[in-house]
Each structure stands twice: as C-alpha cells, then as structure tokens.
Length: 217
Image (cartoon, rainbow, N blue to C red; front, top):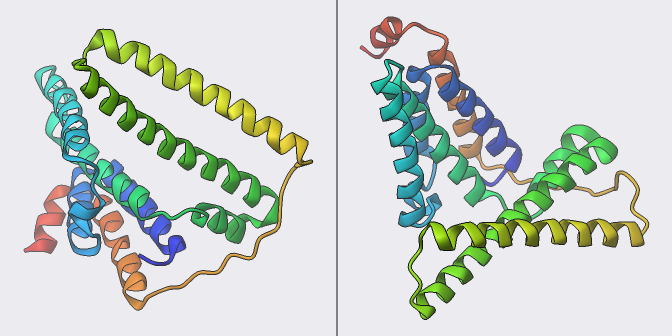
C-alpha cells in the first residue's frame, strides 16, 4: 500500500477482527494472502520461526490447561503477520505525516515524533543484534543463556543512553511541543479496494461461527 493512512486503517481493522474472534482472524489471514507481498514482508526465517514457536508453545500450554489453544494460535499468528507487514511497509516519516494529518501540528506532531523515534530505535536494535550475532560467530561463541542475558542488558543500557542523548539534543535546539510539516500522500485504487475489503473480517468477527459457515457456503 502506498498510502500510509489506508495501510494503518486496514491494519487497525484487521487487528480488531483477529483479536475479536477466530473467524475474524482467519478472514484477516485471507486478506493478508491477497493484499500483501507475503514472504517479502516477513523477517528472517530464524526470527519468524522463533516467534511462531513461542506462540505455538503458549497455545499448547493453553490447550493442555483446557483453554482455547487453537484459537489463540490462529489469532496471534494473524496479528504477527499483520505486524510484520505494517513494519516492513512503513517508510521513514510516514507515521509522523499520518499523525499530523489526523491530529494536527501540536498533538499529532508529538505523537508522530514519539512513534518515529520508537521505529528508529527498533531499526537500531535490529542492526546491533545482527552485529552481535556476527561478532559471536567470529569468536566461536554459541548463543545461550549466559551470552544472551548480558547482551540484552547491554542493548537496554545503550537504548537508555541514546534516549537521553536525543532528549538533550532536542532541549539544546529549543524544542518544546509541536511542529509544522505538510505531509503528502499518494493513493492507488488498489489501496482503496484493499482498505474496503479489510472491513469484511471485522463484520465476520461479529457473527457466530455457524453463521460464518452459512455465508461462506
């Protein structure tokens, strides 16, 4: 999707549907198959498999305890795929532009700036993890609890220091609250169609499962 407004709106609808019911989650997965780049938007296989394994393990424990394990697995898988798609498709500055467009140059700029800083931090953390992985491989260190814990602490301390440096930089430059930008968006007709189709999973999530099968049939 070229228009970040429609992309975030579709993601909000689909996430709501996936959270509301299993039928909505299945419908969201179908939407994801038809309207996203699919594998191009997914992270590295190792990261993806690790996340899916964590979800599957939690679902298995839930099912073993008598809970809705299968429903949890379907819903969380749908949310994971949607989240990776939105993250991969979002370009620098788009969240800030959407926030200013929706909420104005004061509140919107503040929220958008915070979101942009969070996305930048995620990108920095991903790069640092990759560098650590390469360094461990060169030194012949195998990933384990003894190595992961100190690395995680190092990442947390580094991000805290970086946040403090950014806050000091904004203060030195005289930033108080709000700002002014003129965001521009380009929408493709396919984006509009995909956004309209994203409403269907929300409607399906409000219906009983029996009624969903009747509609599909």
